[in-house]
Amino acid sequence: MKFADRFISAIILIFIYFGTFAQSILQTGAQPKLVVGIVIENMRPDYIQRYWNKYGENGFRKLYSQGAICNNVQLKQHIQNYASGTATLFTGVYPATHGVINKNWYDKFNVKETECTEDNSFIAVGSDSKEGNASPLKLLSNTITDNMKIFSMGKSRVYSVALNRESAIFSAGHAADAAYWFDVETGRMISSTFYLNVFPDWVRLFNSENYAEKYSYRNWAPLLPEVSYTESLADDYQFEKGYFGKYKIFPHTISKYLKEAGSLKPFKTTPSANMMIKDFALQIMLNEDLGTDEFTDFVSVVFSSMDYENNNFGPVSIEMEDTYLNIDRFIADIVNAVEKKYGVENVLFFLTANTSAPYPVDYLKNEFHLPVDYFNIESAIALLNSYLNITYGENKWVEYYDEHQIYLDHKLIAKNKLDLNEFQNTVASFIDEFEGVMVSMPANLLERGIQANGMLEPLYKTYVKGRSGDCLFVLKEGWQPQYKFKKVIYNDQTHIPLVFYGNHIKPTVIQAKYEAIDLVPTLSWLLNIPPPDKSQGKVIEGVNR
Image 1: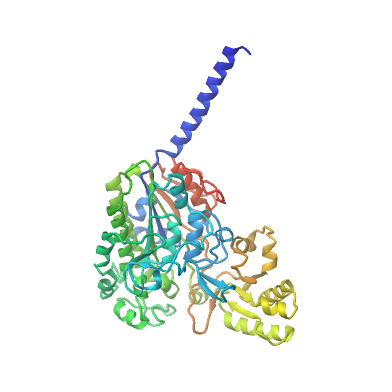
Image 2 (image 1 turned 120 degrees about the vertical axis):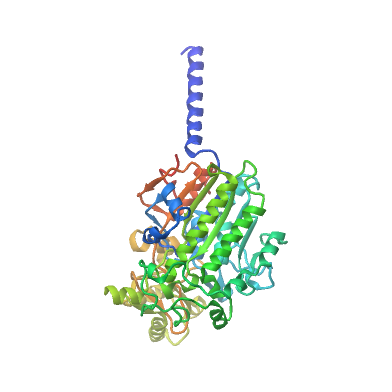
């Protein structure tokens, strides 16, 4: 080939390369100035269809009418809770990699239960309580926001706000400028010295408004007349438990509930608490230097669906419907304010959930005659202890247990010269015999790393050596664990909502199957940044123009 021909061929290849590169940039669109991630705890996707006719035009309706809706997204992990769910969403990997197997787990080294964000190396900023003694250091993977920080050499600004500490911290990541959450002891929005040492003046001013105290003295009454809540059960439905197992009828006297609880926890279940989160998020965007340069900034806003009272009311309660009618208004306030400040084309929104919500056992059992019931974990462990004592001798073989797993005393097993794997197998086989248990697995099989599909897949995706127990078990669909005196929040639902709206997002409905871990690579693609190295998900096709 002549030199001229080779030169022309080279020029053509260069044009093809840069044409492909340019097309890639055009596919994702110009980089947005701001990403606003809206996460709702315990949100079922069907809340959108169920309450659609009562939503306003600028909240859920706007996102779902003008956004890219992913209709079939699953959060496939063994233990469903807002802490590990948030970690999975924002890292793009499952607990087996990011390490947050649950909100709490048993620390064998220190022989005590540990909380996933608890860290006494840091103290609270904004209060004197221990609610700020926290960090994301038990999260073993980078978040999408960490990657934004690294890629921009620290120039991207990252903030989060939530009612629950774990949601705030894991949506912010390790490198965030600040993560803020609600302190149930003081009623203030606080942070940790892990993120910042001095509170901005605007946060002090916000806390001086005493939101929790002010709104706790207002009764929670429904937005609409009670007869309008046709998508929900009657307010006095017999199988609805209500606050403290007795208060289940509107209006709810929150000040009375605070006295009975001895803390501000009941406030977290109300629309007023979500309004506080909305107002705080707007203050972040008003007071922090966001969206002013070529580096995309990121704000996570996490709302709560009844918080720890979710199971006492359930998805078909008037309280739940009213919660979402209020959240709809708060989302509209955020979308309107952000679009007005930055321009519609300069903001990327996404809405998702870190958990879904189950129907109550009594509702499924009595109304629809489904084969569900309660699994009494304490009785099961008592029978297991008796069996182990008969088989291996009188000892305290079980060191710790919860509604998902059992931890054995390894030192005691070794002292008695017993084989740990055999002991784990024995325990798993025994637990597997209970009526409410779908499957029980010993840790030694999970440690072998054999990939499994179906009902075993979530166990493999969640197991972490050194943090998980010796026996992990999954209850049958619809079954709920039960303690005699301890309240438990349990969830076996995996279907979560996901919708993108804003910067170069096309209105579409995507029916293909995706997983929660696909959010991070999709956001990375839309922001033109590399996905995290260990990202396990894939880009959702058809989201952008």
